[in-house]
Structure formats: C-alpha cells, structure tokens
Image (cartoon, rainbow, N blue to C red; front, side):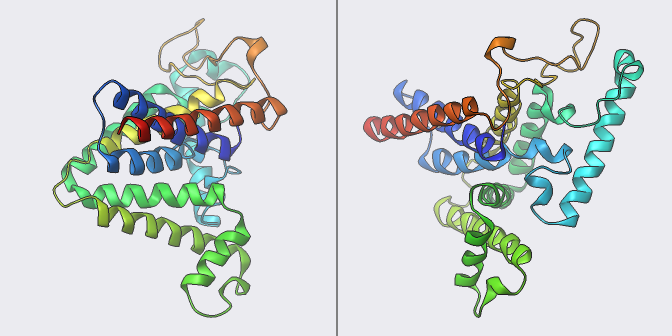
Length: 269
C-alpha cells in the first residue's frame, strides 16, 4: 500500500477501536483517543524503514536513507540466517521482512510502553512528536510543509532550500503536536496506551500489505509450508496492486469508517 494509505489505516483503526470501547461502556480518556490516533497514524509508516525508497527513508534526507539501507541489509541477513529455505532460494532482500511481522509489532509496542512507563510523560511526548512528524511528512506536500516553516520562522524560509525547508516544516508540525500533548496530558498521567498505539500502527501496516499481491511474513518465526518467512495474505483473488483503483476504494472505505467512528465517539460521549 501507499504511505498515505498506511497512515490512514493506523489512525482509523485506532479511532474505530476507541469507538467500540466507548459503545461498550469502557471509554478511553480523550487524550488517549486523540493522541493515540496520532501515534498510530505515524507509526503505521515505520515498518517501511526497511526500504531505502520509502516515505520514512526520505523524511530526513541522506540520514534516514542510510538508516533504511542499514535496516534492509540487517533484515535480509536475518531472513537468510534464520531459514534454510530462504538461504537456498532466490534472495528476497530485506523489505517486508522482520518489520512486517506481528512479532515485530508486539516488540515495538512493548519497547514504547516500557520506555513510557520508565520515563513517564516525557517519553510519551517524544513518541507523539515523532509520530506526528511522520504523519505530516506523509500527508502534507513538500510545498505545504515548507509554508509551515515559513509561517513559524521569519523570512522567505521556503526559498532557502525546498527539500530542507519541507523537512523542517514536518519537524515543526511534530513539535507542535508534542506541545499540544504536553498542554493536555497532565504530569503523572498513565501513558501506557502509547505502546498500544505504536503496536497497532505497526501491525496495521503489515495487515495493509497483506492485502497486496506481495503479502507479508506475518507469522514469523513460525514455519508455514517449511518456511519461516512464507508470505501470508488474503485470498489471491482479493489482493490488489499498490496504487491501483482498488486501493483507492479501500482508502475511501477507511475514510467512511473513520468518520463513522468519530460520530459514534461524539454521540456516546
């Protein structure tokens, strides 16, 4: 799926879950609903850090492209070393490997929850800020992000260097998100839900790719047909190509689900 589709799936899934809990009488805190959706939206882009040409790989120029290249090589090495079937077959690289598994999502969520429990609100604010930054980088065009920087910093900021100013604009949006969270979330508040939002965003990305023809090794390290990295997805007839009209239809369905979730949250609360 495209980056924006992944981001939308993370946020909409979180809102739908919160709406279901609210309807069942176990309403989460408003801050958890709003900022959890922001975290899930941004973290739904994170698994593609294993692809040097992904949205996240271009978020901070050469630095993140270097990081994505390193993750891709490490993921490819893990795939080869952990499965005899993969070590003897055609090399499949590191994309859609360990970062696209259910276990990877659980580990990412546990790390985020552990850091948030250890460092409290400060860690949660950093995670929220990073997630909003990633979401802004995916949802806003480079020109729009540059204009954000131009509004906040004096001068003809966006003319200095378009790519640089667009990246700075996304960072500034992330900072504003973290600042808003700091104003809303009181000191000492429970922020364990940040880990859950990270895990869901990560898993939402994998589930979205499972709808495409490439599928994902969702159940690694379990063996499926003798292979730990066997791609898992919906039935072949239900899969679609990335960027196809079918994906556009899925996006509109998610938009409808998101709107319905927001309306339900407002009606029940």
